[in-house]
Every structure is written in structure tokens, then in C-alpha cells.
Image (cartoon, rainbow, N blue to C red; front, side, top):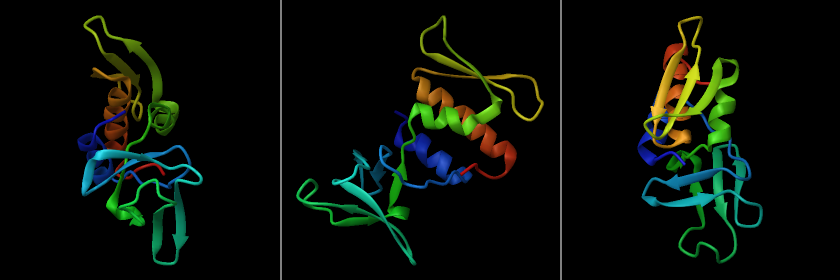
Length: 138
């Protein structure tokens, strides 16, 4: 799982989130706590004023709901790979430990993004793609 700092970089670059079951997120005031959207526990509710993440039952007794803008999406490895789309070339273990993601961005020479965690290597590549494109994929 990517860290809150990397997730904030993706958000700042323009990556947008459409909450759905299985997504993980942190609440900005409680960044050390990770929540997962799941039917019967945390559900997204659409209102004209925006999306609210509702906490059902007694699972999270201190939270009734959180506005989406107060939540920070922590995309999973598979979600990050999907965001890379056709730019993705490969994921490999590094000879020095960790992982390397190879992508081809806008016809440029292939680029390698390395990190200790595969999800973070993917996140670095998505950040480069979003920055190069000037807008984020939804």
C-alpha cells in the first residue's frame, strides 16, 4: 500500500477518486488509520453537494460520515497499474531489492521507477504520467 505522502502527491497532481467497494482511504485528521469501503461498513453516498463516506452501525463509533474531500484515497497496486494503461511495460524485482516499474510515456524512451514496494513504484509512474499529461486519468 502506498503511503499518505505519495497519495497526497497523486491528489495534488490531479488524480481523482470515485469511491467504490474495496477502496482504501485515510481520513485527513486520522491519517494513521486506514479504512476500506465495504457494503454494510463504509458506503459512499452521493448527494448534490458531493460524495459522503458513511460509516454504518457501531464499527467506527466516533465517525458518522466524512466528506470525500476530507478523505485521501490510497490506491492499491492493481488500481495504479490500471491507471497506467497502455504505458505500462513491466514490473520486475530489482537486483538490489525492491521493485522496478517500466513504462513508456508519450513516445519517450522507456522510464524505470524503483521503490521498496511495488505499489509505490507504480505510484511514482502514475505521478509521472499525470504530470506529463497535465491532467489525471479518472
